[in-house]
Length: 191
Image 1 (cartoon, rainbow, N blue to C red):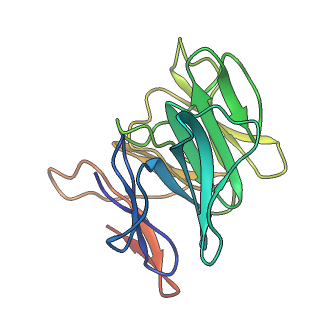
Image 2: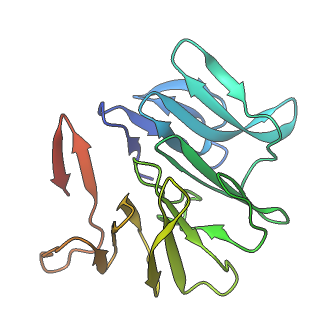
């Protein structure tokens, strides 16, 4: 699975029962669904005293359990906002909705949230077919109908996904499937 990069270019890894690592240095023995909450804080599922919980890791603070969490099957984070989905509980975090889910970026349990905190929510996880972009102020700003595999949220009115875009004009090379936008060193890169 691909690492998640913050604006500083640091690579965060953590999927399944594997370790959480930053630039190849292990931070925790389990780091499921690792995401950047902001450029200095990672959020992930881990096991503490035999139970799954959500936790954060921040420089000089180490691993800190997030109170009242019960782990997750899927996790999305960015811009200081996070959403977790757990079978039997539903969506919780920035919003709570038993029927909704995160909009997955791939098949590894990680979901889509923009660097500014714009959330990507599937209002009816069972039915699918629709993704709402919710701005950091809680307003639904865009509704995307259809399947959005590989979704990357770029703001309240901008997103790209495999085979589609909102607010971006993408010209793809023949055979290109997944396109990503990376902001590194003050520049915006389409890769």
